[in-house]
Image (cartoon, rainbow over all chains, first blue to last red; front, top):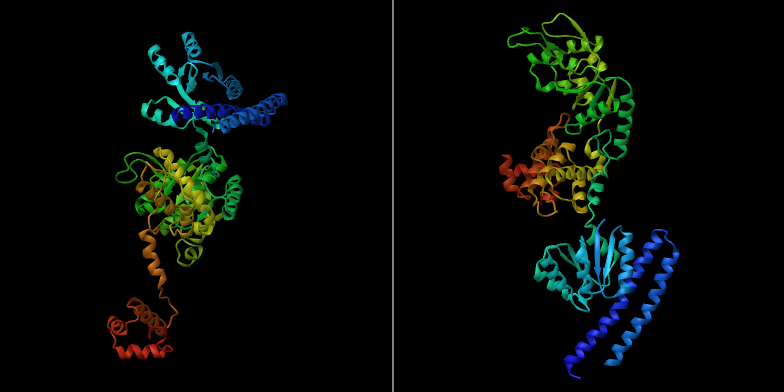
Length: 69
Length: 446
């Protein structure tokens, strides 16, 4: 693999690892809103489950980056 | 409420953002590609577009071009995970295009959608209470004053305000007038500013032709303030031979215009003010005793500013807020500046601090929010007064004491050079040494 291809590959992997982080951050903001405004706790639980799933995804993406080196 | 379009290929991310934006009180629709976004714009308009930079069928910038061709110009916020996008945006110089970096925070979203909060400044300026519509200060002495104002306002007793120049006598008079909720107006007259000939006409009015130049009938301030409050400033500067006339009005509550022969009933509260001390009034025959008792049914002392230094930051903020409001500027004090203002004695009281702030305000650059205080806060007036107050020669001192003080002051001035000091004092150096020895040795001037 040429070094240019390698950089492009790495950029794509980093982008994939960032996506779950963005979702985690937004879901955390949503939970804050739920708690601050006494909204139904199901919404918060739903968001927490999404955070947990996305943590798994993020970890898997980081592993891919590690393997590609 | 805004109509918002979110263009992002990450459906799960869009879903959460929708929840949050809806909670912030806006309408939101989503598109996962440029193609979908184009479709939305065919039949709809949006106020704001939240736009991902990298989309499956092209860059977010392509949507900007498309919007230009169809003639729509919503506000655009590009969202990307890469800081370099900011540089690209800066090159484009588009005024209605902003940028947010992922991961997003709710505060960022609120800021781009609602704009900066404007309520903050208002809340700040209304944080200072103006007691009775004008008085500022939360110190103990001021609360005592508020207490007195409240009590006397309920009665119709005449009030005499005593306090140093600039302490705020007219503001207190206005406060008493406001608190008493009387029907009539507050009429102010400065007894010190009127000539002896005119004072009668000013206070009691005159009939047409009463004296040369009296071309029309005139109501005096006692009549004008009927059912209200009459504020007589510098009442102690009134010529003593006019005082019996005033006494008569105060006792009978009736005035006769100059040149008139009819008594007119008047019902007003008289608030008088003086910057002289009670002792001065009594010793120097400035005001007749009978008048004093009529005017000062309820005397009120207004504390000088140096006795309520804890109020200085409040006053400084209030005056600066007022200047900011009048001139559309946004100056603010630093804690160090407030401390500096607090450490000064302010012999000219509130008037002096107000003047100093106004001066600093004019000297400061309105493009910034930093106000610049002068190096020396002292006004020329207080400097002169200080010099005379520092070296007082008062009755009761012996010649020897004054001589000793003079010699020491002269030596201080010439840094202990005795030849020079003797020359300045007009005595020989030997005499100077003799005097110093007589005072207990040459000591520090060796």
